[in-house]
Length: 231
Image (cartoon, rainbow, N blue to C red; front, top):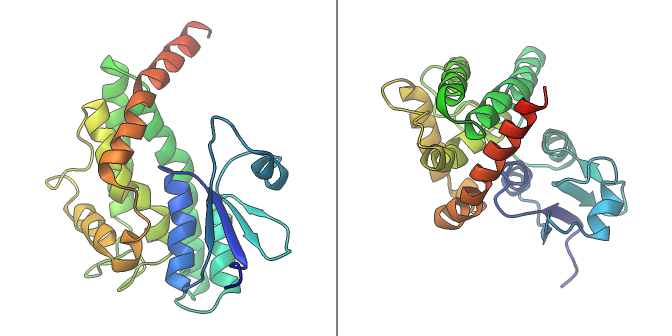
């Protein structure tokens, strides 16, 4: 059997690698996952992503490497046949890209701030996370299961971290964020996303994910406090 033409450099527990995997699986693209140890980065990773030295990295035949999860998802959508991920209508495509940027900047910053703080600072950060979740929930099409409509699409993939990873962050930090009474539509979406047959194939095991994330909590809090004293 010949090797897959597509290889994905990734690592366990990354919601960004998850995005690339879901996009490939939804398109029905065979790929080889090359797991990377980010605490001891390989020459292979550094060769293919010398700028940021991060995962995911997509390798497609002899083409130049493609880095950054959002870029990879769009590339996969444009190059391979199969289910369309981004909306076909230009305005809807622009809106999806806008909210993807919102998720990776404003929402992610509030999420990291919550996870890397404690006390009053954590309370404030958690409030910001919930406000951002409300904004995101408002983008769900009325009467639809997914942001992509009746099937998983681009924005659903981008938000995969909320559907699966957020529960672990809540447990580790001891702060409830995504609650049925505050965000019922988003909770329904999260259940639908994680129950999707294709999505489930590349969701990391919950217990293993929790074990991998838990030690990072104290490290993040310590770094945040050290940075605060240096201002």
